[in-house]
Image 1 (cartoon, rainbow, N blue to C red):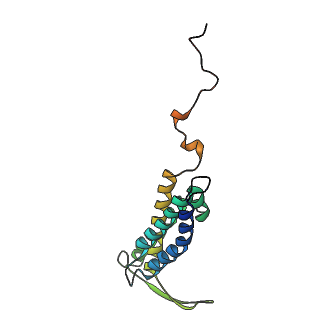
Image 2 (image 1 turned 90 degrees about the horizontal axis):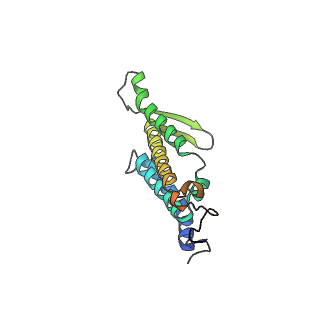
Image 3 (image 1 turned 120 degrees about the horizontal axis):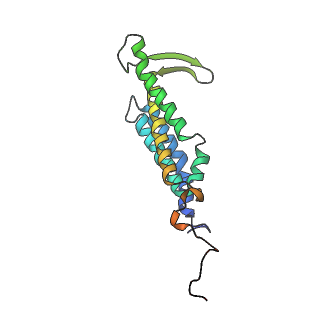
Length: 165
């Protein structure tokens, strides 16, 4: 079953239904990662798969509406977060990637226990999602001008009929 443009309605509805649950699962993996299986890499992969499913169903324009950030912002932000978290302990004389924690009171949430591995994992998560978006942009640009093959160019009006007198 397809619509007039060749898109599968079943795939489109399934992708739109599964996407929110997959993103929530990816966030669960991100936050539960240092105590249970998961982490930033696995969470980023699940989110990347969810975005890829939306790409298959709706194309690059659908993905761009989901993720308003350019891939280089996700990559850069993720790299800065992961590298800063890894290197920062060296400034205080600790080893590379030494974990630190802090307890804070946040309005509406109450007492929250923050750990530096979460920042590192969030950076890795952003890196993986950013790479996925770069790959999708490389393969799936919807702009007909950028995907036109040089072989598709037709020279209309300049055809010469050499057989006519």
